[in-house]
Amino acid sequence: MRQRAARDQKRLDSGAVSSPKDLENLQREITSLAKRQGDLEDVVLEVMERRESAQERVAELTERVGSVQGRIDDATARRDAAVEEIDGEAASVTKEREVVAASVPGPLLALYEKLREQQGGIGAAKLYARTCQGCRQELAITELNEIRAAAPDTVVRCENCRRILVRTSESGL
Image 1: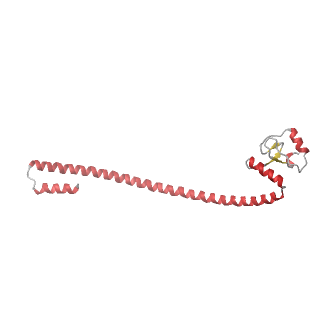
Image 2: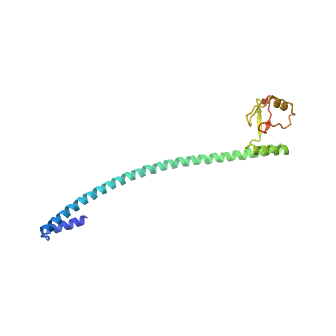
Image 3: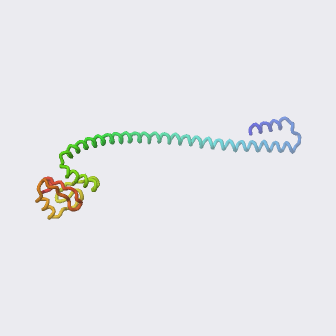
């Protein structure tokens, strides 16, 4: 557009156009080109400002992404450490369980495993203050009397949830 305006201005200045009508048209075209050039320069300035604003926003968001990624990395490292610790504890508890399970009679262990599967992982519950800690139900006096009368090596079960009841000195029995 600048080249065209310069070429038209050169034609006008050279005197090559002699017709008044052509001169007037040429002057209008030069004026029109100058106006369009000004409008386009305004558009270019606006685009440059928007680009600068967008670049600032990109820099801000990039910084935030870096910050968030740092927190994610930190949380991942803590999670991995916790998982490693839990795996270690699980291995230790599994070994302890194997030792204890080896000392439990086979039929009792089979009953425990069956109840554990049926009861969502808990096959035995502590009897504490007349309450089964598995189902949190208080046992009736007749049930408590039957449990008191049972031999110490007898397997007793909760009438409500059917779990094996573990009697301790805290049970009051």
